[in-house]
Length: 583
Ligand SMILES: *[C@@H]1O[C@H](CO)[C@@H](O)[C@H](O)[C@H]1NC(C)=O
Ligand SMILES: *[C@@H]1O[C@H](CO)[C@@H](O)[C@H](O)[C@H]1NC(C)=O
Ligand SMILES: *[C@@H]1O[C@H](CO)[C@@H](O)[C@H](O)[C@H]1NC(C)=O
Ligand SMILES: *[C@@H]1O[C@H](CO)[C@@H](O)[C@H](O)[C@H]1NC(C)=O
Ligand SMILES: *[C@@H]1O[C@H](CO)[C@@H](O)[C@H](O)[C@H]1NC(C)=O
Ligand SMILES: *[C@@H]1O[C@H](CO)[C@@H](O)[C@H](O)[C@H]1NC(C)=O
Ligand SMILES: *[C@@H]1O[C@H](CO)[C@@H](O)[C@H](O)[C@H]1NC(C)=O
Ligand SMILES: *[C@@H]1O[C@H](CO)[C@@H](O)[C@H](O)[C@H]1NC(C)=O
Image 1 (cartoon, helix red, strand yellow):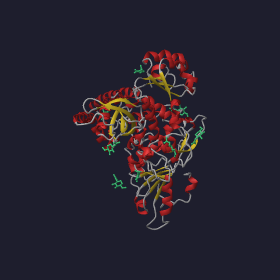
Image 2 (tube, helix red, strand yellow):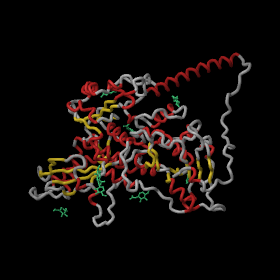
Image 3 (cartoon, protein in one colour):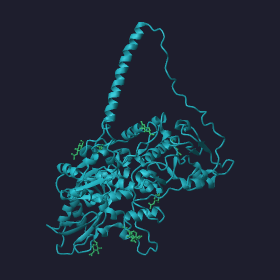
Image 4 (cartoon, helix red, strand yellow):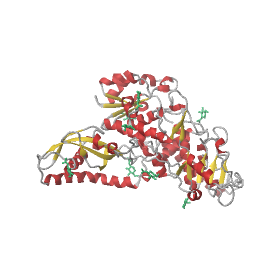
């Protein structure tokens, strides 16, 4: 919907601005040649050269250490490290073979800047809440009560008992309990369903999720209530929010996660639109490239918009690269919100949606006179953000003309611009709809499971780059290795790109094996995810595609306790092919 031909009738730029005239003047190169110099001065020069060489050496050592150091834990990667490592693979402006690995996004970095104040307040209250729960349980025990009266879930002692239980329960170790809702009656006497919000300690983001479980209670000592049984993750369905919707409503709104609000922000009025300053990136060569390139490019645009203090005009329509599909064909018409958290994005940076923006622009532009909307057209990335800093036009329109790789968005952030543009990694989180599935899978195993990541696919077939991978990931080799690393009969979640479901059957006599496909009802046509994504697609079923699978698989693996990785633990082959281990 944003091809250049659609734009022909869009308003033309003001007086043709001299795009290349305003060149930024840098420091003059090659400072001063040396002619005849007195001896003392040359000595000083020699000494300073030696010092400089030592300095260079020191920098080199530090750099090499920094570059070779690859933290084993993906959660420890910083956005700076990602920026560095991606810049290294991009010297000739092409992404190499798209990796099967997922690029970390903002929620994977420990950046306290990204913590919303609301969440920060809740976090502080977390550890206090256990103490409060214990105290209120004790207070409840002091109250007068009739031990033979039937259990009423509204009784404050119920919530107190549940809080005290959760504060001690086994899943407490991974979970931070944030807030509770009032308990409701379960299906049988003596049962109450209780819902709460929580956060996972293994997640760096402050995103909150809901759980609701079924508790069976009996009278204990004095007036206290004892919990005799607790259900599994999301077993307390009477406390699930979507059952409490308006009963008489004629419009059957599909129950969606009430905490997701990714409506598209609208510009309210002509005056508001004209007051705004926009940065509009037209679709370039990045379209249909790998997701890693998309993120890298998109963050460049957001970074430039931030640098210019402008609102970024974004296209929610995406194309999933063939690198992430089963048949290798690109799939157009995907929605940004399938993969990323648009709500978090619009709270973090200033964005508007391209379709609305173009409509408003056409609608409110006076062709001439004081009402007109001024535009600066920028055909090439060679015009730097620094050159645009002082431009007062309403809209800066980057058009990305030219052939690949000249028309990639991320080129705007190369060279000197790399020093001034900061990519706002904190703005991009994975879709909460997908993370709800991750939470559900991890929750069903009570966050108490070990993880095994098995990379096969084309890498296992490429014997030149990966001489041992295929043998080292054969069923027998895996059994041999993993039984030494993981305790018997633990829950073992296997994240893998091996398509054959029964490939891991030999592990089943040693572990409780879990694979992504065991959870396919979580995205089937009766799932919450299905309901939520069809809302975005205007009613059309949304396929659970390969990229979504990779996100969910990887994120479930990240939440496991003992983690066994292909390239550290199963094989001595290097992740990026032969002899790349220490690059
Ligand atoms: C540059 O791109 C070519 C493919 O176009 C690739 O073979 C080569 O390895 C790349 N070089 C670097 C340093 O990335
Ligand atoms: C996250 O960062 C904060 C400070 O920004 C630090 O106190 C905390 O220990 C970090 N947490 C982890 C798990 O690295
Ligand atoms: C439970 O207690 C609440 C108030 O504490 C009361 O409104 C409600 O009727 C009681 N329910 C039953 C089943 O007794
Ligand atoms: C969703 O967010 C928008 C602002 O982006 C706000 O106007 C709207 O009221 C919110 N809707 C709900 C249901 O919270
Ligand atoms: C950024 O723009 C807003 C209005 O669009 C203005 O209020 C603010 O002062 C600007 N900030 C900077 C640093 O220029
Ligand atoms: C869900 O999919 C199954 C087959 O996969 C089909 O038989 C059924 O009609 C579908 N249900 C809905 C509500 O679309
Ligand atoms: C999905 O929506 C349908 C009707 O819109 C509803 O009957 C069904 O319960 C919903 N499924 C879930 C899991 O929320
Ligand atoms: C996997 O290998 C890494 C790096 O060698 C090591 O730190 C980790 O402990 C190993 N994992 C297991 C489960 O042994």
